[in-house]
Figure 1 (tube, rainbow, N blue to C red):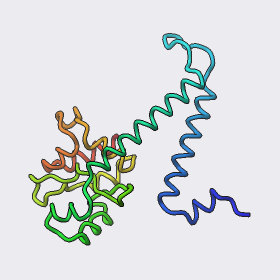
Figure 2: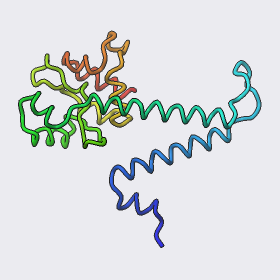
Figure 3: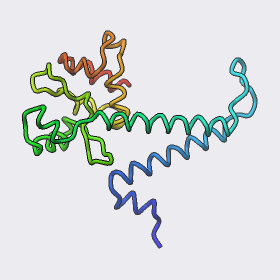
Figure 4: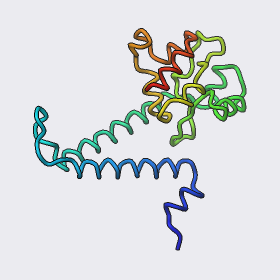
Amino acid sequence: MSDPVTDILEHGSDTQRAALRSFAAALTDAAAAAAAPAEPRPGLGDPPTAEEVAGAVRRNHERVWRFREQLYDRALSYREAARRLGVSTNQITNLVRTGDLLAIDGPDGPRLPAWQFNPDTRRGRLDGIRHATTVFCGRVLGLSAWMTTPSQALGGRTPADALADGDVDHVVALADYT
């Protein structure tokens, strides 16, 4: 009988491997919480109980799932994106394949987070996404949250706004630092 973890790592889909990594991270977090010192630290009070840590992890997972649902609900279908940009759906597929646009899977198939599109840009979409994703240490959810959050390093603009302004190098440098 083969090991299911090895099977997923060697033969599983990207989604299965991502789920396995997520599960491993949760186990690592739980093990770290269980190994936390039981004595109070000066100025920090009593350490959290295992139940408090489990509750915090659960609330964080719920928050991430709510964000994912909101991101997906506001995202564009390939057809909507193609219409918006004046290109074919095949071109949208190619832009996703090359990393120039990002997609998120959901119940109605893959969709494109809306923050990638800006009618004030030359092509109606942000340039520099592929470059930012190569250095950003997260995936679509984390990148989407980061891209839509104002940054002091960008003068209060969001990274998406900075990309729309043509400030690709600055955004990529900041993504690499994040």
